[in-house]
Length: 186
Image (cartoon, rainbow, N blue to C red; front, top):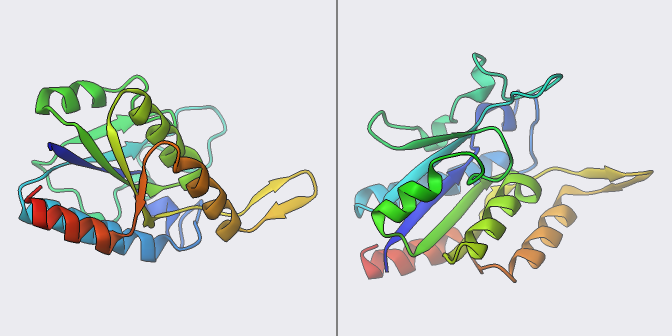
């Protein structure tokens, strides 16, 4: 089965010192780096997704800043494809779907940031488009959210969104994905 890896928004602003630091970003980024290495070693297709904030008043992912750069844990090589997006959904107003169809992709392995926003929107769309989806649960990160006077801890946000995404794909750990894909030779 033709499989591609999507690395969603693993950018400096989400890491310590960034303008929108996520809980567990370093750990998730390191695991995403391990997935990327597996795909590189086995010749698997992979795409970096990079968010650029274009809306007035945006506070992070500002074009021209260090915060928008792909983090070194998943360093982008010049010859590797990169999709630039301005919406949470990686398919919206991008060439992602065309790239995947051109490659004959049937299955997507998805990791990245933020679980409750861009990962969620992309996973749901990918499933709706007919892709088999694997969400790498330990290679995603999020943050605490507030609704009214209630603050929901990041671990609860992560668990709730992953629980919901089970309806759209299979949840697996990095180790499980690498083991499975290495055996299949991607």
